[in-house]
Image (cartoon, rainbow, N blue to C red; front, side):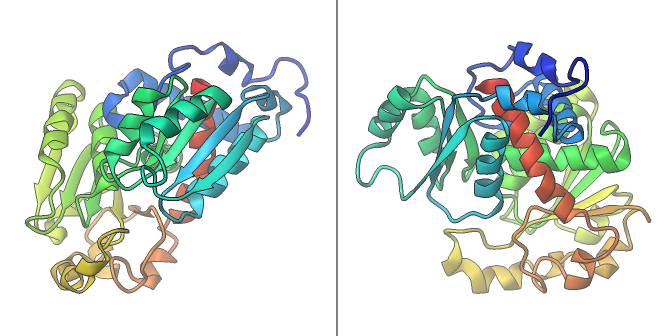
Length: 321
């Protein structure tokens, strides 16, 4: 990294206080203005990756990385991100609430460090960490939401399409945490959102109502269908995720049968717009929710999404720490 020539184009980030000290629990709690601020900072951090000004954004600060689940993208991007921002990350692995209570973990960390990122099974764990720690808590994934993934995804969508408002994003698969964050973010920024999923695997009803209320303000259209072929018509992007998430392994055989008609393959992609993007949060089970040829096709932006996890999360950390 090198100091900029003249005034750095990212220097103003230190003066942004809209999210300073805030918890990032989910897209549910963020306003449209806050989302757009994060996406703007993420884009500028990416464009100025080697600007040494960013090393002041977390200078002298430490982030605890609490992992109940294995991770590639979340761990590496948060840890590398803190280093690039001039701070330090401490990796802690294990099920929270077993050796000692979640509130006690939160109150201990609160005395030593400057922020917590938690990748958990239960969303309640994230809520308890936020309740008992006065430092910012970032949801790195819970069973309710995956906000950092969705922010990186919409950064990618905006980069590739040149805009967000008015686009149609179709999610094909399980109405899980990723689907929740995507539909909430789409509703808040004016992206039409369709989820094609089997009956019984629709998004959380409470979050769907929240998304509908947001969509009413932005003019976005939200749709649920159990017909994948119908759902992808006129889509600007098709998104999928694994059919069986961590913790659901005993349901694998049943889910493989139920979700078979929802595979993202060449036939399905051909029904969307000719320039439709193919998106996946990874890791992918090639041959299950998505075929290898589609994942590796020119329309696929899955590794752009993975790259943008770094920049979107750096933006979050820069703004809250």
